[in-house]
Image (cartoon, rainbow, N blue to C red; front, side):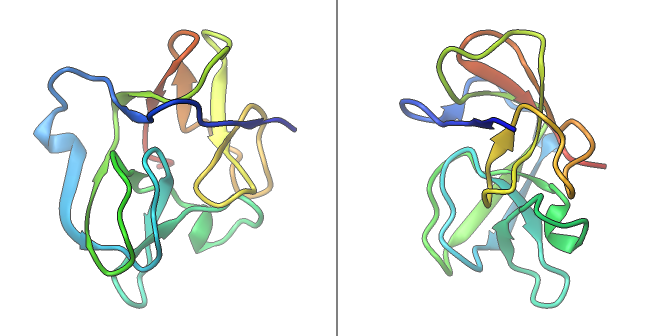
Length: 131
């Protein structure tokens, strides 16, 4: 298993992200960081980092955060966009939900069996929802 480390300033690199591929007006239930895979908790409606350690509600990916968001602040989730994410990535390979909260991995995990991204080039990943 190999976690994909974030490198440099993680950001959305799609020039005009589609409005139908983002959800705004949500609140962060914990501190979130740019590029984190996130889910909306059904019990409180807040956004948390997804986690592929187990096949449970936290293993769902509803979108990715385009920027850092402190706990309790408004967050927007995005999907079907390219994100400048890392360095030295292998183009064409898939990205899966990691066992590290909010992270990505190069291989499937217990809760992240489905690809949620495709590496576009050495620095960018096309990210999507897990469903």
